[in-house]
Length: 502
Image 1 (tube, rainbow, N blue to C red):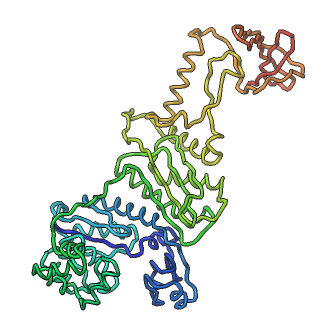
Image 2 (tube, rainbow, N blue to C red):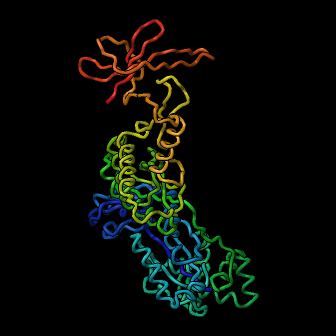
Image 3 (cartoon, rainbow, N blue to C red):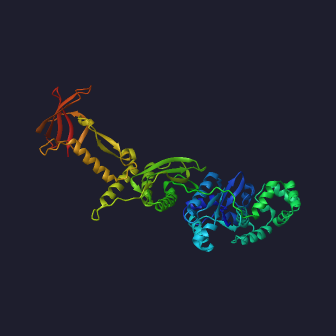
């Protein structure tokens, strides 16, 4: 078998820089875990700061250094995002926590024809994601891991692009025992016994007596591990499985309480979402946006809704900008995460070639902007109710209840609802002359001015079967300001204004 191991030495730090503005770094930045340097950028390396160095020593080497907390959960998520991006070019991928990927390249060579073509596609993914990667090929997964890790710092010229078992064994034999992926205590035992290179250990595996003695002194797991380095037999691995939903996050280099600063990572995340939806021929109708604090925890969560399914990054970015302008940030934040749990098929219904759809699209975009600017609860539509009492004949309905996971467009739904309401409420009689005002008052008010009746009466009487009995005679009247009013008279001969014609 042939394996490609890719190690990302500063995955979290690369993700931070990716979320920031495209300006060159001018300060030393390090990621710290338990008072030790875990990752450092080029400026920190220029001051001789290295991974695993004590924080106190690093602080003595440079006057100003920016410290970032190590976030294992964020790094694990970024690793899955990289695997998802590579899944378009490679079928068999294995996660190598905390910051590495393994690729089974033998099946893919039949598709690409050459190793160079395959590696060029994988390298293009890492370049687009703006992450540093150290990689190497070998005949076994354990050997590929050692080459990818060791060549990162010690010997970059030893990066392998050969999967021959003999070549793998020869180059492994030249490496020091300190590069083995075993506990530090066993490394000290090997050094105390006089072993300096892996070739000295491989020589003991040939003779049965020496092999047993090595196992007795250092344990059988070490012997099995050395055998795994040299064999190309298939081992049981948990291959990466592409998830059906979108989830991606980015972190900033420093905290901010300005939504304008978050627009840059939001733009990158939404571009990734658009690519995700395009590949699957799907669209999204709602997104979950989470603002993260310094520790990677959710500081605020909000949901973006679209009246019609959309995949355009510009569309979602405009809605997010309007919502942030209205709400703002109540505390400093340091990251952003976007999730899309549900998607809709991109199937389109056949339409007339000469039917213009521009009006529909503009109406849907207007509703989206109004919801983002004013709040979803403040944008509603009227719904007809089966009640003869005018103030109870209509109610307010949220647009999300109307368009939630519906295959038709909002315009089609509104048109269908309107036609159904008309067919139910109006009798099939052209002589029907009932008049209804454009503006209906929420509560009728007592008529306190002189008016002239120009139409009516129309009696509305209902509720005799229950407790809410009402009987009213409605008229259309004109006041001295020439306004058309909808007035009524109750059984006590009291007059009220209930609506205005406009």
